Length: 342
Picture (tube, one colour):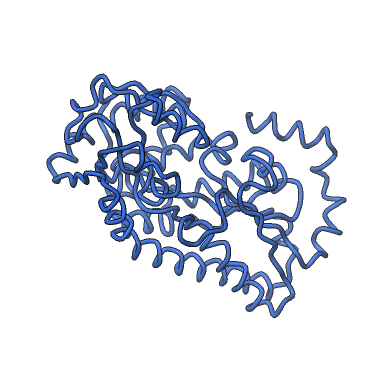
């Protein structure tokens, strides 16, 4: 659904008028919805959400309370974003929740843009691209970008057929894709990409509908994909993240002390979640190895071969979506990379 379509839908429901915001703003309890189970061992997003709840309630001395709704209890990505646009809600959205309203967010997922956690965090915390996108998103939707939340590390390739070390190893394989951008990525390596919902991934891999997929190690464990995948290639393809967003009118209505305490809690919760996530990455990889997966660590030269094919193909896909080149140039500059020749 496009941004204009969502806005029209909300207007039709009488939800966009600020006349009704008074009651919501006066409330001391705000809902926080997100994907995945409320299990700190399997869901890094839950670690962030639970920590945020505790810190907000502590720092505001109970003036602001958060009710957690994991497992998409308040609806799918589109429904939860509509709720956040319309009322005093918080939401941790994935690319599926943000991209219909701001397709420029796909620029932040240019393959192999980051060499590790610190460059990725600096990109989102300090970069001009993310600042500009956050401002544009608020103007379009009335929703504020509050934090970039890590969901388990960098994306890795898995498959059931063979060890993947070069782009040529992808030829003839069928891979599950999360969205059209991943289809383009797989096709650049000579594989076929097929969009399959997360809830169907395990069975698709088990039955051979797809040979492989890509996710951070945490999600491979969460989905028990090690039972139906033999090979794990640690390629550091993309930084795996989601996005804490909140109704801007509600946040602006908070008293200065409460608003300051809320933003401080967001920063502290995100730092804690990042620290725990990075600490656990190697343990998760070892867990998958212990479960029988063959772990392939790429050399810098091998990773460069993937980057050489993936980045130009992804750039072409971005242009096909009508993404203005200024967003790409801004992001590459923030990441310390040269513009990609097309």
